[in-house]
Image 1 (cartoon, rainbow, N blue to C red):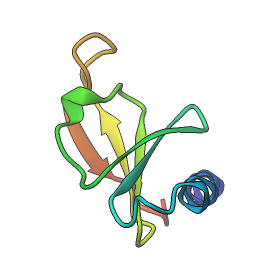
Image 2: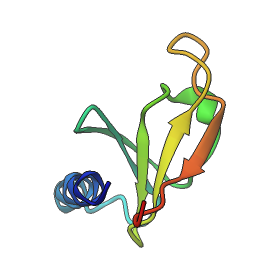
Image 3: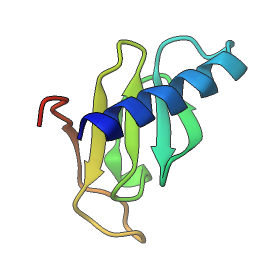
Image 4: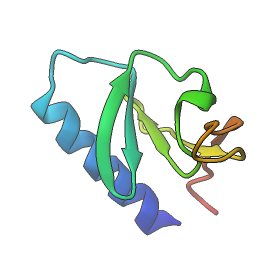
Amino acid sequence: MTQLIEALHATAAKWRAGNQEHRGGVVLVFEGKAYGWKNELRDPACERPGAYAVDKAGLVFKAEGGDDYNGAKVWVAVDPDA
């Protein structure tokens, strides 16, 4: 899990470096690629299950449940020590 968290942090940091007008908020990552940004973590139904959100402090959340058509059901905090 630690390698995944490190990879997500690196992907989010690279995206933030190239998009400095978006301070704070969360960088959205799916299948190892940043695909968007939101000013706050909100409605998981707008994201596919398996998407990750990385906030400025480095906290990571995963969209779970649901399906690709209806979106995810919930954001779950990812334990970096798991």
